[in-house]
Amino acid sequence: MTALPFDHPFLSGLLGDAEISAQFSAKADIAAMVRFEITLARGEADAGVIGADAADAIERGLADFKPDFAALRDGVAQDGVVIPALVEAMRQAVGNPHGEKVHFGATSQDAIDTSLALRLGDVLGILEERLRGVVAMLQSLEAAQGGVEVMAHTRMQAAIPVTAARKIASWRLPLERHLDRLETVRRDVLVLTFGGAAGTLEKLGDKGPAVRARMAAVLGLRDVEHPHHSERDGQAALANWLSLVTGSLGKMGQDIALMAQNEVGAVKLASGGGSSAMPHKQNPVGAEVLVTLARFNATLLAGMHQSLVHENERSGAAWTLEWMLLPQMAVATGVALRNTGALLDGLEFRPLD
Image 1 (spheres, rainbow, N blue to C red):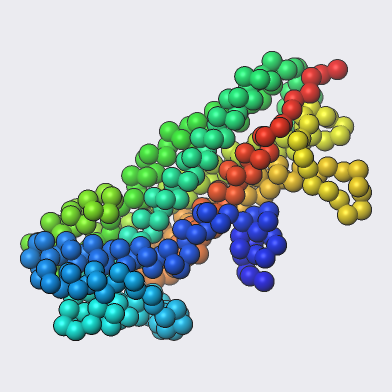
Image 2 (cartoon, rainbow, N blue to C red; image 1 turned 45 degrees about the horizontal axis):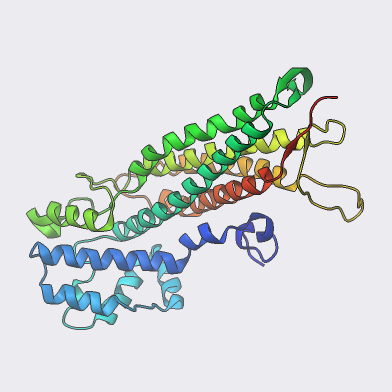
């Protein structure tokens, strides 16, 4: 039993997404932070901040690094972040005399936020692929069944007959606009965070910008010239995009659930959920979960806007809130996109009598 439905032993059958969840696992997080530390050491060696022999030792020592998660848990309980305990373990893995150069000039948020950016790149790639797949399915559905005449409904009441193409377009067009918005979202969140204790890179002197630029190039992240530890508008914009996607899918799910009612019969589902008491029923489970996930992300979005409020140069409270909310929103969006594909597969519009 777990506190979250996404990795629950049986609720995950409805709400789980192993592919997206894997990017928010401790294993993926540690791997990305190790990548940050190795890239940092290489960048500092190239700029003459540390010796090449130190960078070589750090890369060798961290190549197969496997931390003690119980020790990391204890460290987080004390420090509020994992980096002090993690860096200590990394320094031990590298050993003397070069271990002390691990994490040189960086701060905890540099490693944690850069790890998130690296993993969000993979998450957004998965979501984009699924979103494009849903748009393609809607285009195919419109081409095949767009001419079927169905009843339009305004304010839940029968209005006038329209073509199914009108319905399908109202589902497809917002999703296409979300694809257009995605590049801006990527630019805002796929950013290297490297500023040192308070964003000044004070330990690197005039070599800081060169090290930062090299790290960004190697990691495939955008280089920004000013500290942005407490600027969380990119993360909030991502959360907004995730909620927009699930909201549009929720609208589709709501429409399909209503049209699939026995009394309406405007669409036929390829499959549905069974009932323990009424064997004749075919419940629109796939459509319903889209509505649930839309409402879930809309609720969490308010919390992500709360996480914009960082005190001064860094906030422990707002930052921790972001850790709690953003992964859930990303997983919910992945689940919604996957379920939409299954829902549209075999969906059939029924013409008016």
